[in-house]
Length: 326
Image (cartoon, rainbow, N blue to C red; front, side):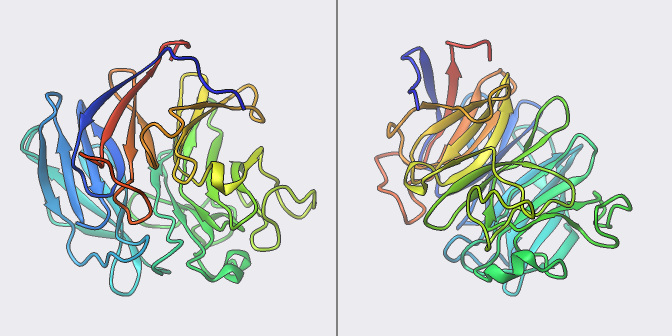
């Protein structure tokens, strides 16, 4: 795979964060989740970081804790691990930029299977206005093929927590299944949904998600050429990938990689190819998100217990690829 030219520019936007996991934008202000501290932070344009609030009753252990964020209007949707389950809550944002706070939460969906590992945890609103959530197999690989269990799935949920009537399985949140630990969700301008997924010891995956689709885990890891399962459009050895957050930006899918310590760019018109950026420059990369200024913001994850933190880790980086039109 080719590495990018040296035309990329990176600016450090914030430092000294502890396991930042998700970043979303409310207007010009970035809101960030910290997995282990259960804090929601806001980052102003001048680089000031302040605490918005702490999500209560978060049980952080292993890969579990405060995970994905999504914005709808003035509401912040939060995916987190509690004592007995994973849950999605909705918090009204109070105040203004520079003084945001969290109002009283409402539970959107609870009772999601939990474990210290393979919790999934990414949430995002699709172009259809529905909330999508990734749920890992929580170390019960057989559950990924069981439509009566919500682990090992991508879910589609109405913003109020109800089941959409046009979901592929009647009275079920399940949108797709046969997933091991998906953590990436992004849509292109045509409404196509893409997801990145951690494999076991053979292949990590980039998938095009179809309603009702079966992606094979645990019977298949990577391409199986079995008509019962949908094969990935691209796969990588985990040592070069471990993909977490993804974004569609410009004409490409951008994938943040943990073990692979790189930002991977996949052209939308050539889903089987890719270019690598920032290889081993900033360590483990957890999430990537388009920013209002046209750049991509990247969260490092060197303080998550699996990396080697450098001074001032973890960081938020602003990345501009000046070799393209992004």
